[in-house]
Image: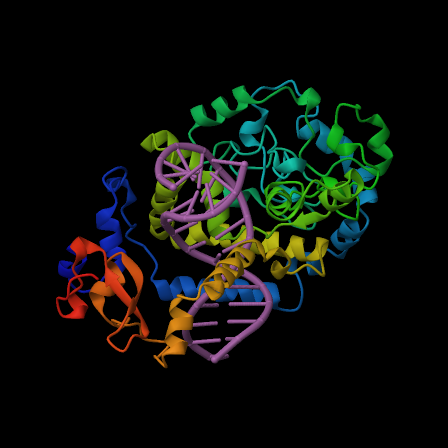
Length: 408
DNA sequence: CTCCCTTTGAAGGAA
DNA sequence: TTCCTTCAAAGGGAG
């Protein structure tokens, strides 16, 4: 058991040591000399939080007109659409136009909508780094005055090599059949949409990533996706079409992305290219380390973006709570718990039956071995002919905490 | 087909 | 106030 000898109990360090991909890119992940302390970062974070929680949105406070624009998207469209259709590639002529385009989970950065109905990602979505210089101007940018200062690297993200960006641009399908990523189409403009834009055909839009304001928002996804399927598969026999249709239209508003998520979205492509890794779990580990190696200023950029995302999200969905999306895993957990409760030999029931401490198993959870080794639960009969719950390691049939007794 | 893994941060509930 | 849980993204891998 290597963990035993790892010493110091530095879990993080140990974890890193165990990572097979550690070598890759490790050298380039040197922490800058001016690296901030965790305390500094915490200060920064709290300052950002305070700023956002203070006397309202600074951006909004600075620009009351912006609030009105958000509240009146149609007006925004009318005012902004022509410009940003030009800027954002509605001309769809320039194959490299995405290179500098802005996309994020939210519209003010968005060129395409990653939350298209049926769980399908926009063909533009997942390859496009979230945080990139904004080429087009989103209608909501007055509200969220994204400054290209955040992207002071000129036309290219420093994190994203030009070749990658170009590759992404090359893979873009024709814009002709694509929805422009900005929120874009005023209700008045719907009639101009081609019938092939199936997701836009429903007048109410609500089942199609459309906010009640009429703004399609990437955070809104219909329930027709994974979750809905799961519910259907597990709990339902085929239902009459109307009911299923009705359920499928219930929109899901997703959480706004936090700073790290924004960073991941932007940097994932680069890491994949550098490390030739495809597994997201491994990539995320690398990204996590790189995130910690970022300078204070670089991290602040993402915290600021995340803060603005939250602001916009709050303004678009005032009553929304992250709790609204709770349930999937919770339901699973509950089901497992119910299974456990229905099992007469479940640890909980057996411990209760024999007056054992619920906090301590037969061998005791404080036992180091018992926590590390695979366990199996045994319900055996004691010499009093009473059933007794036992936990024993399956490790070579030997259970150290049981004083060397062989597994029953 | 579905869930897990893996990361950080935000949010909400429980203690 | 602190701690815990869940979910955001992503896509390969496992069952």
